[in-house]
Image 1: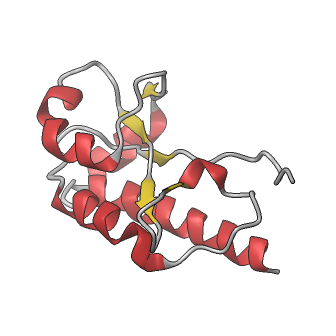
Image 2 (image 1 turned 180 degrees about the vertical axis):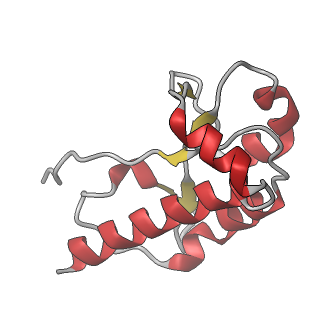
Length: 126
């Protein structure tokens, strides 16, 4: 049940961040954009939220329609909590990702229309 709730939360965040990118666009442009194929940057150099905030204009100058974002929160004891480890069985706290949320809210997206948060589907290992 906890994993289903977590997956639902991740999907909601993904939808939320994709809507941030298109909130100001006219409906006609959104319809036109939805009909064509998209090119999403998703390679070894995926930006984390801080890098995206600091270098957004440079990243948006590349010929992509969106980017895959690497989200790394900080646990209570300041250890990294990678969102790509969605299925590792650990319980997360929203507070661990507050810095990421602030970074993403501070982004003034001008070009990207389709952005994704990196998650993984590897099961927990003991």
